[in-house]
Length: 168
Image (cartoon, rainbow, N blue to C red; front, side):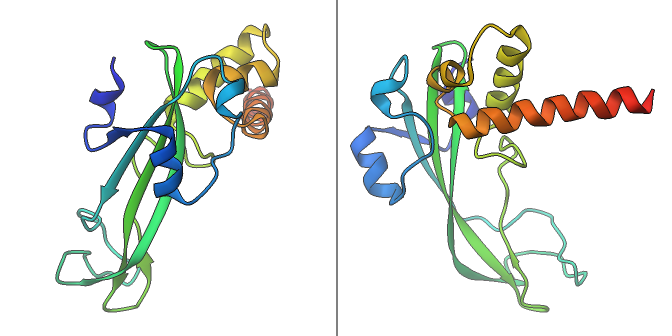
């Protein structure tokens, strides 16, 4: 499956343009240390969160929210077809509820809830860790994720296995 199908609103850019537009350094191995160069994608999302409800009970529609700045989400993904990392940067609109003044932002469905990575990249790391063939550094070079994120994923998967064994 191509990365274009997964990220329809993203456009591909060069590494220099990505660094200039993101104003941040992504965690992970430097480009020279990765096995293959990464694919760089950028997108902007300015639509309000669809069909969500604020904690005050107000439905978040265009009438009930006010634009309240932007937030940049940087993610790392891994494309198994091309066997190389994908660096994504999503500029998202923040919204403020007119009723209670709480801010809201739409979390991309493909983002893992605890890591700066996509769910697919985390599954790939878990699969590579289960095979016990590669070190954290080697997995980091393959996937483009930081070694700290790889070790966190490993710790979480071990903790999940322990929790499952204790339930049985």
